[in-house]
Amino acid sequence: MNSLRTLLIPFLCLWLLGACATKQEQAFIPNQTVKQYLDQVYNAYPLPGLAVVVVSGDQVYSYTNGYRQMKDSLPFNQETMFFAGELSEVMVAAAAVQFERQGKLQLSDQVSLHIPYFQMDGDYKGITLHHLLTHTSGIPNFSPAWDMPAFDEEALAATTQSIVYQPMEFEAGTRVKRSPYNIDIAADLLQHVGQLPFEQVMQEHYLNPLRLGRSTFDFRQLDSTNLAMPHHIGHWLTYEQRVNEIYPYTRENVGSYGFHTSVNDLQKWMQWILNNQPAGLLDAHYKTGKDTYKGYGWDIFRSDGDFIYNSHWGAGGFSADMSLVPEKQLGVFVWTNTMDDFNPALISSRLIGLLRGKELTPVKPPVHIAMSKMLAEGRCMEEVLAWFETESEKTGSLYEMNPTLLGQLGVNLLHRLQMQEQAMQVFELAVAKYPDSPQAYLNLAEGLLISGEIQQAKEVFDRAIAMNAPPSAYVTFLGERIAVEIENQKNT
Image (cartoon, rainbow, N blue to C red; front, side, top):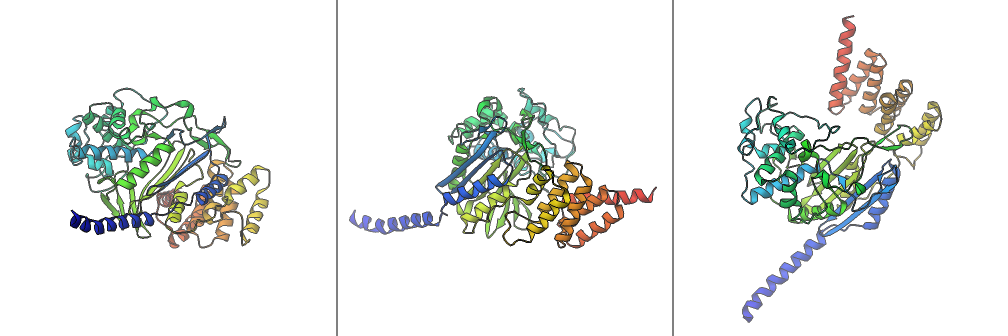
Protein backbone atom coordinates (compact mmCIF):
# COMPACT_ATOMS: atom_id res chain seq x y z
CA MET A 1 0.00 0.00 0.00
CA ASN A 2 2.81 2.39 0.91
CA SER A 3 4.62 1.68 -2.36
CA LEU A 4 1.41 2.31 -4.29
CA ARG A 5 0.93 5.59 -2.43
CA THR A 6 4.54 6.51 -3.23
CA LEU A 7 3.85 5.91 -6.92
CA LEU A 8 0.54 7.80 -6.91
CA ILE A 9 1.72 10.93 -5.12
CA PRO A 10 3.99 12.18 -7.96
CA PHE A 11 1.22 11.57 -10.50
CA LEU A 12 -1.28 13.33 -8.26
CA CYS A 13 1.04 16.31 -7.90
CA LEU A 14 1.56 16.46 -11.66
CA TRP A 15 -2.22 16.31 -12.20
CA LEU A 16 -2.78 19.11 -9.69
CA LEU A 17 -0.02 21.19 -11.27
CA GLY A 18 -1.62 20.64 -14.64
CA ALA A 19 -4.99 21.71 -13.30
CA CYS A 20 -3.44 24.79 -11.72
CA ALA A 21 -1.63 25.59 -14.94
CA THR A 22 -4.87 25.34 -16.87
CA LYS A 23 -6.52 27.61 -14.33
CA GLN A 24 -3.71 30.15 -14.63
CA GLU A 25 -3.96 30.08 -18.43
CA GLN A 26 -7.57 31.19 -18.32
CA ALA A 27 -7.84 34.86 -19.12
CA PHE A 28 -8.83 37.02 -16.18
CA ILE A 29 -12.01 39.05 -16.74
CA PRO A 30 -11.40 42.62 -15.48
CA ASN A 31 -15.00 43.26 -14.47
CA GLN A 32 -14.68 46.95 -13.72
CA THR A 33 -12.81 47.64 -16.96
CA VAL A 34 -15.45 45.78 -18.95
CA LYS A 35 -18.27 47.59 -17.17
CA GLN A 36 -16.76 51.02 -17.82
CA TYR A 37 -16.24 50.12 -21.46
CA LEU A 38 -19.83 48.88 -21.89
CA ASP A 39 -21.22 51.97 -20.16
CA GLN A 40 -19.34 54.00 -22.78
CA VAL A 41 -20.82 51.83 -25.55
CA TYR A 42 -24.34 52.30 -24.25
CA ASN A 43 -23.91 56.07 -24.03
CA ALA A 44 -22.24 56.38 -27.44
CA TYR A 45 -24.89 54.57 -29.52
CA PRO A 46 -28.68 54.96 -29.82
CA LEU A 47 -29.57 51.72 -28.04
CA PRO A 48 -32.80 50.85 -26.20
CA GLY A 49 -31.25 47.95 -24.23
CA LEU A 50 -27.86 46.28 -24.14
CA ALA A 51 -26.93 42.84 -22.82
CA VAL A 52 -23.42 41.37 -22.73
CA VAL A 53 -22.01 38.09 -21.40
CA VAL A 54 -18.26 37.47 -21.08
CA VAL A 55 -16.96 33.99 -20.22
CA SER A 56 -13.45 32.77 -19.51
CA GLY A 57 -13.34 29.19 -18.24
CA ASP A 58 -15.16 29.13 -14.92
CA GLN A 59 -15.37 32.93 -14.74
CA VAL A 60 -18.36 34.86 -16.05
CA TYR A 61 -19.32 38.52 -16.20
CA SER A 62 -22.72 39.73 -17.37
CA TYR A 63 -23.94 43.25 -18.07
CA THR A 64 -27.36 44.73 -18.73
CA ASN A 65 -28.38 48.33 -19.31
CA GLY A 66 -31.29 50.29 -20.70
CA TYR A 67 -34.83 49.26 -21.49
CA ARG A 68 -36.73 46.26 -22.71
CA GLN A 69 -39.27 48.83 -23.88
CA MET A 70 -38.35 52.51 -24.16
CA LYS A 71 -41.89 53.90 -24.50
CA ASP A 72 -42.78 53.05 -20.91
CA SER A 73 -39.18 53.07 -19.57
CA LEU A 74 -39.35 49.36 -18.71
CA PRO A 75 -35.86 48.26 -17.62
CA PHE A 76 -33.89 45.38 -19.10
CA ASN A 77 -32.35 43.01 -16.54
CA GLN A 78 -30.72 39.58 -16.33
CA GLU A 79 -34.08 37.78 -16.11
CA THR A 80 -35.67 39.66 -19.02
CA MET A 81 -36.61 37.28 -21.84
CA PHE A 82 -35.33 38.22 -25.27
CA PHE A 83 -35.44 37.05 -28.87
CA ALA A 84 -32.20 35.19 -29.67
CA GLY A 85 -32.56 35.07 -33.46
CA GLU A 86 -30.19 32.82 -35.36
CA LEU A 87 -28.77 31.41 -32.13
CA SER A 88 -31.81 29.15 -32.56
CA GLU A 89 -29.76 27.27 -35.18
CA VAL A 90 -27.06 26.35 -32.70
CA MET A 91 -29.66 25.08 -30.23
CA VAL A 92 -31.40 22.93 -32.86
CA ALA A 93 -28.04 21.54 -33.96
CA ALA A 94 -27.07 20.83 -30.35
CA ALA A 95 -30.27 18.83 -29.83
CA ALA A 96 -29.65 16.91 -33.07
CA VAL A 97 -26.09 16.07 -32.00
CA GLN A 98 -27.42 14.85 -28.66
CA PHE A 99 -30.05 12.70 -30.37
CA GLU A 100 -27.31 11.07 -32.44
CA ARG A 101 -25.29 10.40 -29.29
CA GLN A 102 -28.37 8.71 -27.81
CA GLY A 103 -28.82 6.56 -30.91
CA LYS A 104 -32.15 8.13 -31.91
CA LEU A 105 -30.89 9.24 -35.34
CA GLN A 106 -27.78 9.71 -37.46
CA LEU A 107 -26.78 13.12 -38.77
CA SER A 108 -26.10 11.33 -42.06
CA ASP A 109 -29.75 10.19 -42.22
CA GLN A 110 -31.65 11.28 -45.29
CA VAL A 111 -34.33 13.79 -44.33
CA SER A 112 -37.01 11.83 -46.21
CA LEU A 113 -36.27 8.82 -43.98
CA HIS A 114 -37.82 10.68 -41.03
CA ILE A 115 -40.19 13.02 -42.91
CA PRO A 116 -41.77 11.09 -45.82
CA TYR A 117 -43.53 14.21 -47.14
CA PHE A 118 -40.20 16.06 -47.63
CA GLN A 119 -39.88 16.52 -51.39
CA MET A 120 -38.33 18.93 -53.89
CA ASP A 121 -37.70 19.25 -57.58
CA GLY A 122 -34.32 17.53 -57.99
CA ASP A 123 -32.26 14.90 -56.21
CA TYR A 124 -33.78 15.79 -52.85
CA LYS A 125 -33.42 12.25 -51.48
CA GLY A 126 -29.70 12.89 -51.09
CA ILE A 127 -30.32 15.72 -48.60
CA THR A 128 -29.36 14.68 -45.07
CA LEU A 129 -29.80 16.25 -41.65
CA HIS A 130 -26.10 17.16 -41.80
CA HIS A 131 -26.77 19.16 -44.98
CA LEU A 132 -29.60 21.03 -43.28
CA LEU A 133 -27.47 21.95 -40.27
CA THR A 134 -24.61 23.22 -42.45
CA HIS A 135 -26.80 25.00 -45.04
CA THR A 136 -25.34 22.81 -47.77
CA SER A 137 -28.67 21.25 -48.81
CA GLY A 138 -29.38 23.33 -51.92
CA ILE A 139 -32.74 24.49 -50.49
CA PRO A 140 -33.47 28.07 -51.71
CA ASN A 141 -33.51 30.96 -49.28
CA PHE A 142 -36.92 32.26 -48.18
CA SER A 143 -37.38 35.13 -45.73
CA PRO A 144 -39.74 34.51 -42.81
CA ALA A 145 -43.04 36.43 -42.89
CA TRP A 146 -43.61 37.63 -39.33
CA ASP A 147 -46.63 39.84 -39.97
CA MET A 148 -49.06 36.90 -39.68
CA PRO A 149 -47.90 34.67 -36.79
CA ALA A 150 -49.07 31.05 -37.00
CA PHE A 151 -49.42 28.80 -33.96
CA ASP A 152 -51.28 25.88 -35.50
CA GLU A 153 -50.16 22.31 -34.84
CA GLU A 154 -49.15 21.62 -38.45
CA ALA A 155 -47.10 24.80 -38.90
CA LEU A 156 -43.73 23.00 -39.16
CA ALA A 157 -45.06 20.44 -41.60
CA ALA A 158 -46.49 23.30 -43.67
CA THR A 159 -43.01 24.82 -43.96
CA THR A 160 -41.52 21.49 -45.07
CA GLN A 161 -44.29 20.91 -47.60
CA SER A 162 -44.16 24.46 -48.97
CA ILE A 163 -41.02 23.73 -51.01
CA VAL A 164 -42.34 20.59 -52.73
CA TYR A 165 -42.25 22.25 -56.18
CA GLN A 166 -39.10 24.31 -55.58
CA PRO A 167 -35.99 23.31 -57.57
CA MET A 168 -32.77 22.68 -55.66
CA GLU A 169 -30.24 25.46 -56.25
CA PHE A 170 -27.28 23.07 -56.23
CA GLU A 171 -26.39 19.48 -55.45
CA ALA A 172 -26.44 18.75 -51.72
CA GLY A 173 -23.02 19.00 -50.09
CA THR A 174 -21.36 21.05 -52.85
CA ARG A 175 -21.94 24.61 -51.64
CA VAL A 176 -23.01 26.70 -48.65
CA LYS A 177 -25.98 29.03 -48.95
CA ARG A 178 -27.94 30.00 -45.88
CA SER A 179 -31.67 29.39 -45.83
CA PRO A 180 -33.76 29.48 -42.64
CA TYR A 181 -35.82 26.65 -44.12
CA ASN A 182 -32.91 24.28 -43.53
CA ILE A 183 -33.30 24.72 -39.78
CA ASP A 184 -37.10 24.81 -39.87
CA ILE A 185 -37.13 21.46 -41.66
CA ALA A 186 -34.56 20.12 -39.17
CA ALA A 187 -36.97 21.18 -36.40
CA ASP A 188 -39.76 19.29 -38.14
CA LEU A 189 -37.49 16.24 -38.28
CA LEU A 190 -36.65 16.47 -34.57
CA GLN A 191 -40.30 16.56 -33.57
CA HIS A 192 -40.92 13.40 -35.61
CA VAL A 193 -37.97 11.63 -33.98
CA GLY A 194 -38.89 12.92 -30.50
CA GLN A 195 -42.57 12.13 -31.04
CA LEU A 196 -43.55 15.40 -29.36
CA PRO A 197 -44.17 18.96 -30.54
CA PHE A 198 -40.83 20.53 -31.45
CA GLU A 199 -40.94 23.05 -28.60
CA GLN A 200 -41.49 20.25 -26.10
CA VAL A 201 -38.72 18.15 -27.66
CA MET A 202 -36.27 21.02 -27.16
CA GLN A 203 -37.47 21.68 -23.62
CA GLU A 204 -37.41 18.09 -22.36
CA HIS A 205 -34.42 16.76 -24.26
CA TYR A 206 -32.06 19.75 -24.27
CA LEU A 207 -32.97 22.91 -22.35
CA ASN A 208 -34.25 21.39 -19.10
CA PRO A 209 -31.35 18.91 -18.68
CA LEU A 210 -28.97 21.89 -18.90
CA ARG A 211 -31.11 23.72 -16.31
CA LEU A 212 -32.02 26.49 -18.74
CA GLY A 213 -35.43 26.72 -17.13
CA ARG A 214 -36.43 30.13 -18.50
CA SER A 215 -35.30 29.47 -22.07
CA THR A 216 -37.87 28.26 -24.54
CA PHE A 217 -38.90 27.87 -28.18
CA ASP A 218 -42.56 28.16 -27.18
CA PHE A 219 -43.60 31.76 -27.72
CA ARG A 220 -46.91 31.13 -25.96
CA GLN A 221 -45.08 30.34 -22.69
CA LEU A 222 -43.30 33.70 -22.54
CA ASP A 223 -44.19 36.22 -19.86
CA SER A 224 -45.14 39.27 -21.95
CA THR A 225 -44.66 41.55 -18.94
CA ASN A 226 -40.93 40.80 -18.92
CA LEU A 227 -40.22 40.47 -22.64
CA ALA A 228 -37.78 42.72 -24.51
CA MET A 229 -39.47 44.44 -27.44
CA PRO A 230 -37.85 45.23 -30.81
CA HIS A 231 -37.12 48.86 -31.69
CA HIS A 232 -36.21 50.91 -34.73
CA ILE A 233 -34.97 54.44 -35.30
CA GLY A 234 -38.08 56.56 -35.77
CA HIS A 235 -36.26 59.58 -37.19
CA TRP A 236 -32.82 59.50 -38.80
CA LEU A 237 -31.79 62.93 -37.54
CA THR A 238 -32.92 62.79 -33.92
CA TYR A 239 -32.24 59.02 -33.61
CA GLU A 240 -35.35 58.56 -31.50
CA GLN A 241 -36.02 54.85 -30.84
CA ARG A 242 -39.55 53.50 -31.30
CA VAL A 243 -41.07 50.09 -30.59
CA ASN A 244 -41.65 47.93 -33.68
CA GLU A 245 -45.29 47.13 -34.37
CA ILE A 246 -44.49 43.58 -35.55
CA TYR A 247 -42.78 41.07 -33.28
CA PRO A 248 -40.53 38.59 -35.16
CA TYR A 249 -42.26 35.29 -34.54
CA THR A 250 -44.21 32.67 -36.43
CA ARG A 251 -44.29 28.98 -35.58
CA GLU A 252 -43.62 28.11 -39.23
CA ASN A 253 -40.07 29.37 -38.60
CA VAL A 254 -39.75 28.34 -34.96
CA GLY A 255 -36.62 26.28 -35.66
CA SER A 256 -34.64 29.06 -37.31
CA TYR A 257 -35.89 32.02 -35.26
CA GLY A 258 -37.90 30.78 -32.28
CA PHE A 259 -35.39 30.65 -29.42
CA HIS A 260 -35.92 33.00 -26.47
CA THR A 261 -33.68 33.15 -23.43
CA SER A 262 -32.40 35.37 -20.62
CA VAL A 263 -28.93 36.63 -19.74
CA ASN A 264 -28.76 34.30 -16.74
CA ASP A 265 -29.62 31.25 -18.84
CA LEU A 266 -27.35 32.20 -21.70
CA GLN A 267 -24.30 32.61 -19.51
CA LYS A 268 -24.90 29.11 -18.08
CA TRP A 269 -25.14 27.69 -21.59
CA MET A 270 -21.98 29.46 -22.78
CA GLN A 271 -20.00 28.15 -19.82
CA TRP A 272 -21.29 24.63 -20.40
CA ILE A 273 -20.39 24.70 -24.10
CA LEU A 274 -16.90 26.09 -23.52
CA ASN A 275 -16.09 23.77 -20.63
CA ASN A 276 -17.54 20.58 -22.19
CA GLN A 277 -17.01 21.30 -25.91
CA PRO A 278 -19.37 18.55 -27.14
CA ALA A 279 -18.11 16.67 -30.18
CA GLY A 280 -19.92 17.59 -33.37
CA LEU A 281 -21.33 20.91 -32.23
CA LEU A 282 -17.91 22.60 -32.23
CA ASP A 283 -16.52 20.88 -35.33
CA ALA A 284 -15.70 22.56 -38.63
CA HIS A 285 -17.93 20.68 -41.07
CA TYR A 286 -17.50 22.42 -44.43
CA LYS A 287 -14.54 24.43 -45.75
CA THR A 288 -15.69 27.69 -47.33
CA GLY A 289 -12.34 29.40 -47.93
CA LYS A 290 -8.85 29.81 -46.58
CA ASP A 291 -9.17 29.25 -42.83
CA THR A 292 -12.97 29.67 -42.99
CA TYR A 293 -15.53 26.94 -42.36
CA LYS A 294 -19.21 26.32 -41.78
CA GLY A 295 -20.21 24.55 -38.60
CA TYR A 296 -23.53 23.62 -37.05
CA GLY A 297 -24.94 27.11 -36.60
CA TRP A 298 -21.48 28.68 -36.63
CA ASP A 299 -19.36 30.57 -39.11
CA ILE A 300 -15.79 29.58 -38.24
CA PHE A 301 -12.66 31.58 -39.06
CA ARG A 302 -9.11 31.94 -37.79
CA SER A 303 -8.03 35.10 -35.98
CA ASP A 304 -4.67 35.66 -34.31
CA GLY A 305 -3.96 31.93 -34.45
CA ASP A 306 -7.22 30.79 -32.85
CA PHE A 307 -10.46 29.62 -34.44
CA ILE A 308 -13.45 31.85 -33.71
CA TYR A 309 -16.92 30.29 -33.72
CA ASN A 310 -19.31 33.09 -34.62
CA SER A 311 -23.07 33.55 -34.78
CA HIS A 312 -23.96 37.05 -35.95
CA TRP A 313 -27.42 38.27 -36.90
CA GLY A 314 -29.89 41.10 -37.14
CA ALA A 315 -33.58 40.38 -37.56
CA GLY A 316 -36.93 41.92 -36.71
CA GLY A 317 -35.59 44.79 -34.63
CA PHE A 318 -32.92 42.82 -32.74
CA SER A 319 -29.22 42.21 -33.39
CA ALA A 320 -26.50 40.21 -31.67
CA ASP A 321 -23.11 38.59 -31.99
CA MET A 322 -21.75 35.53 -30.20
CA SER A 323 -18.07 34.71 -30.58
CA LEU A 324 -16.46 31.70 -28.93
CA VAL A 325 -12.77 30.73 -28.78
CA PRO A 326 -13.01 27.09 -27.65
CA GLU A 327 -9.23 26.60 -27.57
CA LYS A 328 -8.98 29.32 -24.90
CA GLN A 329 -12.41 28.72 -23.29
CA LEU A 330 -13.37 32.30 -24.10
CA GLY A 331 -16.78 33.57 -25.15
CA VAL A 332 -18.55 36.89 -25.63
CA PHE A 333 -22.19 37.59 -26.43
CA VAL A 334 -23.46 41.09 -27.30
CA TRP A 335 -27.19 41.76 -27.86
CA THR A 336 -29.44 44.77 -28.33
CA ASN A 337 -33.09 45.31 -29.20
CA THR A 338 -32.45 47.38 -32.32
CA MET A 339 -30.79 46.74 -35.68
CA ASP A 340 -30.01 50.33 -36.62
CA ASP A 341 -26.54 51.91 -36.71
CA PHE A 342 -24.92 49.47 -34.29
CA ASN A 343 -22.65 46.52 -35.00
CA PRO A 344 -22.53 44.05 -32.06
CA ALA A 345 -19.63 42.19 -33.70
CA LEU A 346 -17.38 45.22 -33.26
CA ILE A 347 -17.95 45.17 -29.50
CA SER A 348 -17.61 41.39 -29.09
CA SER A 349 -14.36 41.33 -31.12
CA ARG A 350 -12.88 44.04 -28.90
CA LEU A 351 -13.86 42.18 -25.74
CA ILE A 352 -12.38 38.94 -27.10
CA GLY A 353 -9.24 40.95 -27.85
CA LEU A 354 -9.16 42.21 -24.24
CA LEU A 355 -9.29 38.63 -22.95
CA ARG A 356 -6.43 37.75 -25.30
CA GLY A 357 -4.22 40.51 -23.95
CA LYS A 358 -5.06 43.48 -26.17
CA GLU A 359 -6.05 46.93 -24.98
CA LEU A 360 -9.63 48.09 -25.40
CA THR A 361 -10.07 50.77 -28.03
CA PRO A 362 -11.76 53.77 -26.39
CA VAL A 363 -15.42 54.15 -27.31
CA LYS A 364 -16.33 57.41 -29.01
CA PRO A 365 -19.74 58.53 -30.31
CA PRO A 366 -19.96 57.98 -34.09
CA VAL A 367 -19.53 61.30 -35.88
CA HIS A 368 -22.49 60.85 -38.24
CA ILE A 369 -24.91 60.64 -35.30
CA ALA A 370 -23.55 63.89 -33.85
CA MET A 371 -23.87 65.56 -37.27
CA SER A 372 -27.42 64.26 -37.71
CA LYS A 373 -28.48 65.73 -34.38
CA MET A 374 -26.96 69.07 -35.38
CA LEU A 375 -29.13 69.05 -38.50
CA ALA A 376 -32.15 68.16 -36.35
CA GLU A 377 -31.40 71.24 -34.22
CA GLY A 378 -31.73 73.42 -37.33
CA ARG A 379 -28.12 73.97 -38.32
CA CYS A 380 -27.52 74.19 -42.07
CA MET A 381 -25.51 71.54 -43.91
CA GLU A 382 -22.64 73.94 -44.65
CA GLU A 383 -22.23 74.65 -40.93
CA VAL A 384 -22.33 70.96 -40.03
CA LEU A 385 -19.76 70.02 -42.68
CA ALA A 386 -17.48 72.87 -41.56
CA TRP A 387 -17.73 71.53 -37.99
CA PHE A 388 -16.72 68.08 -39.26
CA GLU A 389 -13.65 69.45 -41.05
CA THR A 390 -12.54 71.34 -37.93
CA GLU A 391 -13.19 68.35 -35.67
CA SER A 392 -11.36 65.94 -37.98
CA GLU A 393 -8.20 68.03 -37.73
CA LYS A 394 -8.05 67.67 -33.96
CA THR A 395 -5.53 65.20 -32.57
CA GLY A 396 -7.81 64.03 -29.78
CA SER A 397 -11.30 64.31 -31.23
CA LEU A 398 -14.10 63.12 -28.99
CA TYR A 399 -15.81 61.42 -31.96
CA GLU A 400 -15.21 58.25 -33.95
CA MET A 401 -14.36 59.33 -37.51
CA ASN A 402 -13.80 57.33 -40.68
CA PRO A 403 -15.08 57.34 -44.27
CA THR A 404 -17.72 54.70 -43.53
CA LEU A 405 -19.32 56.76 -40.76
CA LEU A 406 -19.29 59.99 -42.77
CA GLY A 407 -20.72 58.07 -45.71
CA GLN A 408 -23.47 56.67 -43.49
CA LEU A 409 -24.75 60.20 -42.91
CA GLY A 410 -25.00 60.65 -46.67
CA VAL A 411 -26.72 57.28 -47.10
CA ASN A 412 -29.29 58.17 -44.44
CA LEU A 413 -29.95 61.54 -46.08
CA LEU A 414 -30.24 59.99 -49.54
CA HIS A 415 -32.35 56.91 -48.84
CA ARG A 416 -34.14 57.50 -45.55
CA LEU A 417 -34.79 61.24 -45.60
CA GLN A 418 -34.86 61.93 -49.38
CA MET A 419 -32.48 64.88 -48.88
CA GLN A 420 -30.59 64.31 -52.12
CA GLU A 421 -28.77 67.65 -52.38
CA GLN A 422 -27.44 67.45 -48.82
CA ALA A 423 -26.43 63.80 -49.33
CA MET A 424 -24.33 64.76 -52.35
CA GLN A 425 -22.56 67.42 -50.27
CA VAL A 426 -21.63 64.73 -47.73
CA PHE A 427 -20.43 62.28 -50.41
CA GLU A 428 -18.28 64.95 -52.07
CA LEU A 429 -16.71 65.89 -48.72
CA ALA A 430 -16.00 62.21 -47.97
CA VAL A 431 -14.13 61.79 -51.28
CA ALA A 432 -12.14 64.98 -50.64
CA LYS A 433 -11.36 64.02 -47.04
CA TYR A 434 -10.67 60.33 -47.69
CA PRO A 435 -9.28 60.10 -51.26
CA ASP A 436 -7.96 56.57 -50.64
CA SER A 437 -11.32 55.13 -49.56
CA PRO A 438 -13.13 52.98 -52.17
CA GLN A 439 -16.31 53.19 -50.08
CA ALA A 440 -16.34 56.98 -50.34
CA TYR A 441 -16.26 56.70 -54.13
CA LEU A 442 -18.94 54.00 -54.18
CA ASN A 443 -21.27 56.22 -52.15
CA LEU A 444 -20.61 59.13 -54.48
CA ALA A 445 -21.24 56.91 -57.51
CA GLU A 446 -24.63 55.89 -56.15
CA GLY A 447 -25.54 59.49 -55.41
CA LEU A 448 -24.60 60.51 -58.98
CA LEU A 449 -26.62 57.62 -60.37
CA ILE A 450 -29.73 58.65 -58.46
CA SER A 451 -29.15 62.26 -59.55
CA GLY A 452 -29.17 61.15 -63.19
CA GLU A 453 -25.45 61.79 -63.77
CA ILE A 454 -24.94 58.35 -65.29
CA GLN A 455 -21.61 58.82 -67.04
CA GLN A 456 -20.07 60.50 -64.00
CA ALA A 457 -21.43 57.70 -61.83
CA LYS A 458 -19.65 55.13 -64.03
CA GLU A 459 -16.36 57.03 -63.90
CA VAL A 460 -16.48 57.28 -60.11
CA PHE A 461 -17.57 53.64 -59.78
CA ASP A 462 -14.69 52.49 -62.02
CA ARG A 463 -12.27 54.45 -59.85
CA ALA A 464 -13.54 52.66 -56.74
CA ILE A 465 -13.05 49.28 -58.48
CA ALA A 466 -9.53 50.32 -59.54
CA MET A 467 -8.82 51.04 -55.87
CA ASN A 468 -9.62 47.38 -55.11
CA ALA A 469 -13.04 47.92 -53.56
CA PRO A 470 -13.82 44.67 -51.72
CA PRO A 471 -16.34 42.52 -53.62
CA SER A 472 -19.82 42.54 -52.09
CA ALA A 473 -23.47 42.24 -53.06
CA TYR A 474 -23.71 46.04 -52.88
CA VAL A 475 -20.81 46.54 -55.31
CA THR A 476 -22.30 44.02 -57.74
CA PHE A 477 -25.75 45.58 -57.50
CA LEU A 478 -24.47 49.13 -57.99
CA GLY A 479 -22.36 48.09 -60.99
CA GLU A 480 -25.35 46.36 -62.57
CA ARG A 481 -27.60 49.39 -62.01
CA ILE A 482 -25.09 51.71 -63.67
CA ALA A 483 -24.67 49.32 -66.62
CA VAL A 484 -28.45 49.13 -67.10
CA GLU A 485 -28.80 52.94 -67.09
CA ILE A 486 -25.98 53.34 -69.60
CA GLU A 487 -27.67 50.78 -71.87
CA ASN A 488 -30.98 52.60 -71.50
CA GLN A 489 -29.33 55.85 -72.53
CA LYS A 490 -27.96 54.19 -75.68
CA ASN A 491 -31.42 52.93 -76.61
CA THR A 492 -33.16 56.32 -76.26
